[in-house]
Image 1 (cartoon, rainbow, N blue to C red):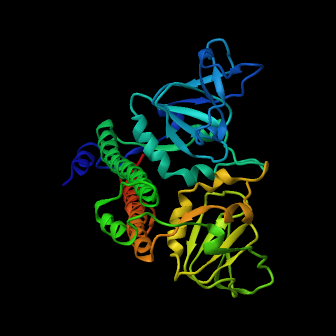
Image 2 (cartoon, rainbow, N blue to C red):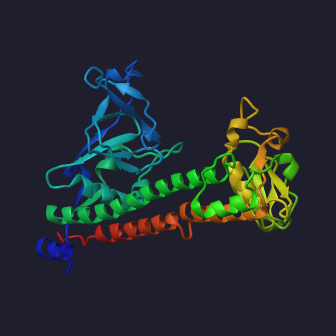
Image 3 (cartoon, one colour):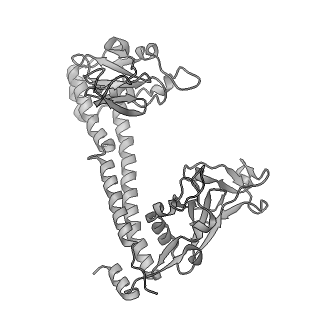
Length: 389
């Protein structure tokens, strides 16, 4: 028998009471500031957040809640919940903040652990959303918040559930920290391996460098080693299984391809740093270029990795929507070591790429699995039989 089972059997064998949120928690609804009460000067008071800005980590300014009566504040370690779209999103603030319209602050009273309440609210986001009213935007009002039903097991049970779920969250955080470290490691080795003017290489790579290019490598213009092609409209074709790429990734699928060999896709407009490597037949629209690469001369994936190091967004030619031109791209200088060296670099970087980006087997896959495990146990641990009246 687990410690939680023992506590439930001891303290609430017949189920638990459910109570309205306002009976067991302190609720502070955010309000709109009046007049010129928000300042960009941090000496004027505490951080001010309004609506979804809090969940987007966007601070709107600073407010002195003591001189600005309409401004409401949330104490450190309060739950911050969105009452406008996205309704039901929650977080716990680690500092005192001022809250405006679209947010409310919640803190448990003596019989309710705030962290237990936080975890429980995350299990019923969809139920909270169902309370939304208004024809123009998603929102819930003060009474909707007050009426949310919350299970109230004894504090000992609440604390044990919090302890268990905190461990899941800590594990997920450790994996995310490792992923960030691995991404930095990947970028370091990618930039190192593709910098042929640098004498520092990883040990297993030294032999290839000394054997195939002891005197350095040849650099060519990008336009000399590949051809850049424009994308076209796809709407005249039937549905199929050929992916259509735009700057943001796959848009749809059609029955015709523009190119059927490995290629690097380079954004022409928009997010200029979002490169794609594709090896199967594809189509591209006019916001993204595709490349025809002679694989007997240069590895397409070597080109992909090298262009990542060039941070193409710095070559933007437009004042509005970021843009690239073929003329600018064709003048990029690219090293062309022997194919054996290119293939070894691709092999090394593929391993890093799988570790940090592959959603089916790398760290992202493990993080996703751990998050599903956390959600499963969270929902299971926070489902209680309601005690009969």
